[in-house]
Figure 1 (spheres, rainbow, N blue to C red):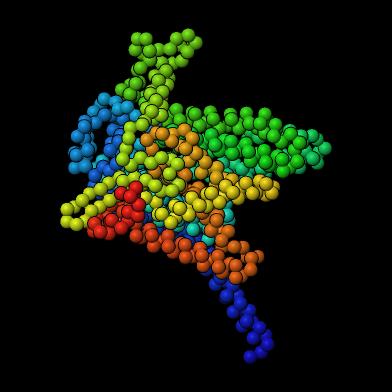
Figure 2 (cartoon, one colour; figure 1 turned 90 degrees about the vertical axis):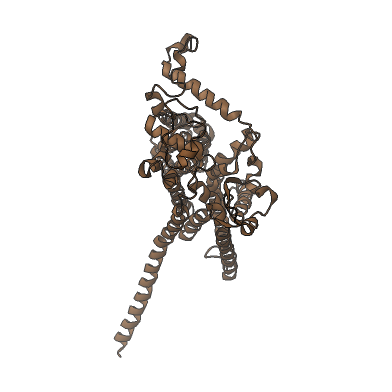
Length: 523
């Protein structure tokens, strides 16, 4: 063999090795997330129709969605309506309107599954929330990629949410909270895109003004912020599912101003704080709040269009209509405002004791999970749907959240950029802190945490990324980190397999069901 032939042979081997690695990486980059989506889909769709009966608050939302689809508003039901509904007769609703505790968008979403599969299909009852749960996993991976630019961490983020019990149960039971979480996460992704776009535009503005020798003290007012408008739209839709969505609007409106102020200070604008508050602040308010408000009001279109809706003609009754300057407000809007006040009074004054209520201060510690379904078959087996997060994932997430708070404080003290930590903690604050601050005495439940679980998962993934180490770290340090993370993830998978029957209502022996109750408060 000649030197040329030998050299060519080695080059061919090197090329084959290089291309093999490229294809392997490409398969991993796309295959990893696809496997996560497949796992999430299987855990949410297989056996979705079991049990074939309305469980927990499905008795409200599924029936409301069915009557909403047929009447255009939520009709009332007789007291014994669940029995025929479960038996395949969903048409026992009346034309009399029902008082609503929540806006209609979530019930319109649920009605999609009812339209596709019929009111007699328990699979159809839950189909829409299952799809929302799958999309929540996908969008969590999207935001993980935007934060970390790591395929591995993206797959870990999606995988942890895919196998967690809280996310699984809220995808397999037709409640509103998973839908709130989905639209709120869409808004957060848009807010993150706005952050990137606005900072780039500030840098371009600064460069132009500096090159022209013009003043840069106050900074510009950025009106063209399409991603901020899109975020307001998404938060408006989330608020149209449950009012708790409005907290994401408020908190991320503040977030956009804080990130603007930090960017202006970094670029050297002298009046960076006052420029943000008095120039950009009013503009951002006008870009977000009216859009979100119009979106929310539009979600009540069915209420406005149908004269038989609840309280639809309140203002036309003698003595109810407003007087003075407010008398010029159209009567339907007066009636609608009165209805919103009734919903508000109902929600803030809901203090009826419930055996599965959980104080928000205990949510991070998983003190009181929610039992949504239980059936004792009398032969030593039972079935249970228990909204209990994977304990290892959940407690690790809580520890990571406290770690990130300390890390942000450290970063501020040392003038370090902590924008990833800041974004994650902002999402967590929007979904969690209002319940702690304003509703700690109200009747609330552990499953409300699905609204901020994606941010808990992202916080945990950020910490796992730190444990995995960087390429510049010594190899022994990275090996130890990889082993620790690998063992942790393997234990998470094992625990999810162990708890899966309790999340999905599988009939299991009573002794096996009992060993899942680690604490008395879990029973």
